[in-house]
Image (cartoon, rainbow, N blue to C red; front, side):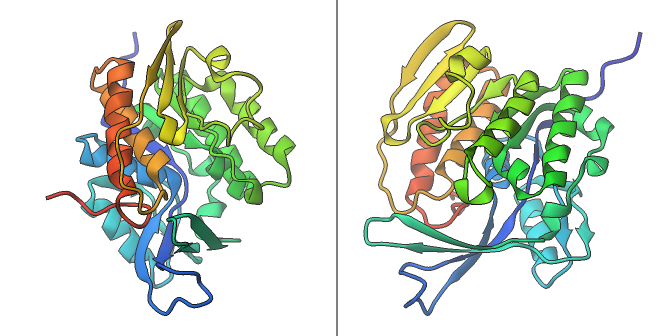
Length: 295
């Protein structure tokens, strides 16, 4: 009998991270920016690490002037970067500007970035097998055909080795040629998905049905209305936590990281969702994708 693989990590994520420049006014008039970094699955990993999870990031990092600093920042958060090598190329950059109501406007410069060169050959089967859960995203699927193939390879390896697959469709229309393409990518991955983490109504156009009918474990995020948890045939409505909204960037990602870490720790799904709502609410009070550490 083959021994079960050692689960070195609680959560591994596949994806991209970009350099973030954040302004508190429209880009046309902004003169000062705060530099940070962000990417949906990386944001979730940082939250998971801060919640005590053992985490790792699978990506490619451009060897431009930002690259070494990105990897150092992730390591400082406790994220393993052994599968996030520096490679020739540029890192994506995005700018966030805010209006008076805290609504975000994003401007991206990511075409041809190093993370978009991620492909199936870069996914190490043994590394995926060393996790308890793998987090995948529709954004990773969208950034290039090769990254989509890498996402599918990771899901297949995870399923083969009994690793939970969590998936956030995270539909961003500007990254796709149309909703049909995003729908196809979602459908291709769903047979491997154990935990579905969509936002509604944002992801409605890409899902092939109601989330609770697609998988046995779905957590549907409804923003300020809280979330619904569907698990083993039961439905729970979990209200949102009180929040002071400064910037909504990354709140759903923080929810994902907190929820998965709490669930893996043994919390019942409704309790994990309540904790994740509190973590997401705390993120809303800070600018940028990744809030500062508490304490």
